[in-house]
Image 1 (cartoon, rainbow, N blue to C red):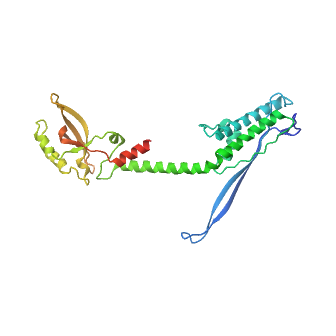
Image 2 (cartoon, one colour):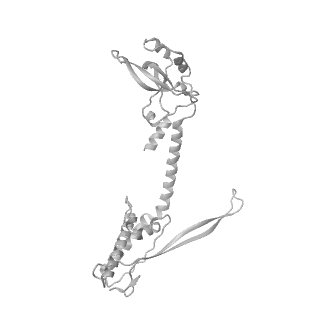
Image 3 (cartoon, helix red, strand yellow):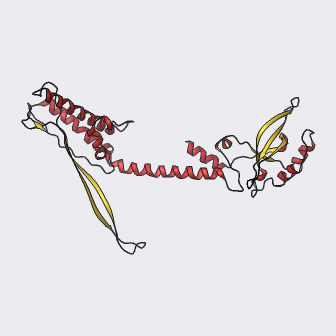
Length: 295
């Protein structure tokens, strides 16, 4: 749209955007792994944008319709200026792309990987105020290209690499938590404060030193597999504690220990004197992995 204004008999009354979407086939040379050359599709986009000039309200409009057009032009130019200014500053937490249709349409042209912007500013020596405003507006684009434009593709690649590493760490960590059929299945809670335990080597003697809990065949079977990495059935977790002699120092306790049933069998629950148990520490690599993920 064009119209007659104070400045120009055929002044632009709207922004014009032409997008060229170019696709072509690019051949790649053969290598030791490929016997024949191959081709891949490459694409790019070129934006040709004619921005309508900003106008001072009430000075350049020849009628109410032109005044309203000028308001819309100024709003979209201001939104584009805020976007470029936020990106040129380098410390923006939010870029207002959605403030206007113009900024949303030109988002990829401004900040896309390998994006390049060239602006031609039209000025008039007879209007010093408008010329200064236009030059300040154009200078923001120069700051954008010099501060961040050349690093966008590098930073995008680094972000993708870091994201893949984090995803790989999470997958390996969750897999290590489950353990295999012989190792302990850990959780985040048990890594922070372990509740896993196993009978001590002198477990039978600890039972003989008290009269509250009697030694059984089940206790003997768990003590027999103690410390064997090929059998995790000897490692349980404390589910309940009870004080049996509060007058002693320290107070004597007995613990309910649950052992996971193997091959779909039900869990086994046994009571032990606290002095007959020793805590099983979590593997240091798992603890370090959890700290790295939390950081």
